[in-house]
Image (tube, one colour):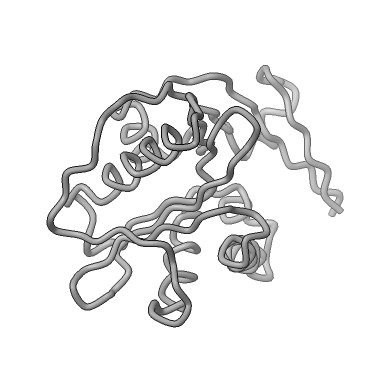
Length: 191
């Protein structure tokens, strides 16, 4: 029923089917160090942290996902996809670390999943709870990622986001990420 078309250039004839501009950003690691006294960063621990809160936050990170934007998806596929993604990340199947930012009550205010590839560290998911936005949590998580990469002798970090996700694009670019490439994604439904 659905055909995905990924293209490095826009295809005018399929413009009505364009659902996403997938932006791959990359940065070189720096020797910056984390300075933080407000929030605690730690690996997600299912015995200590609320997994449902983490799953809800993971789902919110897909606000601009093509699986949410495309109205032809009608059975909550978007929620299922992000729920599975964070579950597999916590289980170590799709990420090697899930780092949470918490307050003094161990409430999860933000998180990031990290994927280790041969010569780079990749950010899988990142999100900050709506009530905690604007407090520097996302930058703290990115600084952690930078330090983790340096500790692993990795010199590059990559992240993918949607072109419509202006807040994420602003965050990454203000942190030093540069656009590496853009992929245009089209959904053609045979319905």
